[in-house]
Image (cartoon, rainbow over all chains, first blue to last red; front, top):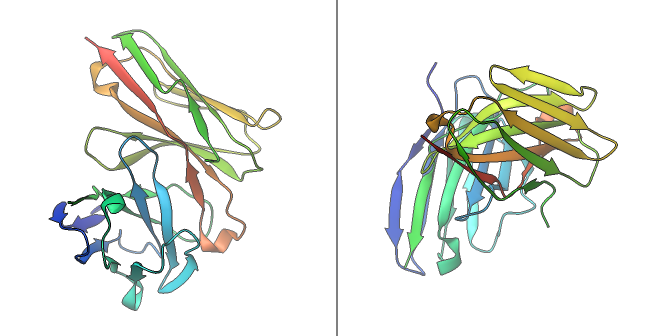
Length: 114
Length: 115
């Protein structure tokens, strides 16, 4: 079974530029999550999708961050414009539906904003 | 502040020794999960313990949960150099089962196992 795929693995941009991350969850997993992990801290949930609907985006900075999950499979997370404090690893995770289960994480995208 | 807080923040042990780390949280939970993160990689799920369970084992891992004290512990027995990683507890406070879990992660315990 293929795991959660993310791309790119690394990205360096200047502040005020835009960037997009892509995630492909495990096949059949209806729930998809985006987390932000700042160096030395635990992951923080940004947004949670159930199929193509948003379940929770309370911690997503909506003035600059956006995410979509068209067709209920792949998802993209965008930052526009980026700030220095957005430097972090962005993790995508998925889980199966129907209960409180473990989450499966992708390798993450390491973003550096200069 | 974060829902889960791990203690200690860092731990250094010799190969073969046991490693114990603790997690405290603040609100009622559905379950508590432990994850491992090797340097520069994504998180890997280790073990899930439900709120009505008190102890769970998986290989060299032993997890306990005390809901009255709102705390959990993870014990790694007979540690190996490959156990060097950061360990995170995550509390699940999801209210709608069909919508999946809602995890809040602690800051992690960084474990170094010296050969």
